[in-house]
Structure formats: structure tokens, C-alpha cells
Image (cartoon, rainbow, N blue to C red; front, top):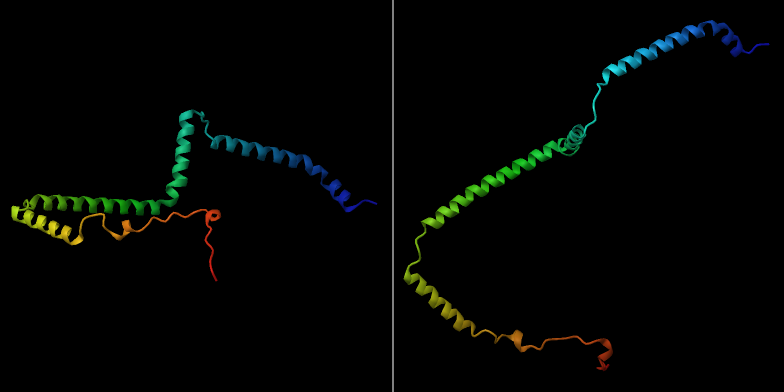
Length: 146
């Protein structure tokens, strides 16, 4: 007795050559389409370098374009602010008149009074104190009385 598989294979054996011909045609058409889609390119150093730069740009810069744009705006704002402030400081310094001799004498008198109030340098408590140098534990012979 024949199995269902054998029965179906006998029945459709006549269609096998037709199916093979259709399969070959489809594969040939697909291969032709793929050949037409892929242009022939010479792989040169310049082309490889350009592709690497393009991919790097796309992955590093273009992916975070909002962040980079925000940082650029912040830097431009800081630059403008810095330039605007620099001009005002220079103009203000140019407009100030030189100090008068009376003002210079007053500053010198204030420095003398301050020096008299503070006293000569080097008489502070810090110099009177001994410098503490810790000894190794083996040299400490002091005992603690309880």
C-alpha cells in the first residue's frame, strides 16, 4: 500500500520540471536587478576616508544635534557677554582720573596706623608655640596613671 506522501509525489512529479524552470527565471531576474542597483565603485583611499568621516559625523554629531546646537548657542552668548563687559571695563579705567597727592598721603597714613595697631610681624602666638613632632610609638615611654 502506498503512503499519502508517495501518492502526492507521484501525482505532482509532472509539475517538478515546470517549477524548476520558474525558479530559475525568478533567480535570474533577481540577480539582474541586484546587479543594476549596485553601482560599480572603485575602493580608493579617498573614498574610504570620506565614508569614515561621514559615518563618524552621523554617529557622533548628527545623533545629538540638539545638544550640540544648545552648546553652541550658550558659547556664543558667553562670548558676546564677555566682549560687551570687556569694553565697559576698559572705558571705565580710561575715564578714571589719576589719584590726587592728598589721597595717596591719606592711604599711606592709614597703612602706618594699621601697622602700629597690629604690631611688628613675628610676635604672634603661632611662633611662640612649640612645633609638635610626633614620635614613633616605641619611643613613647610615658605611662598614664589611672
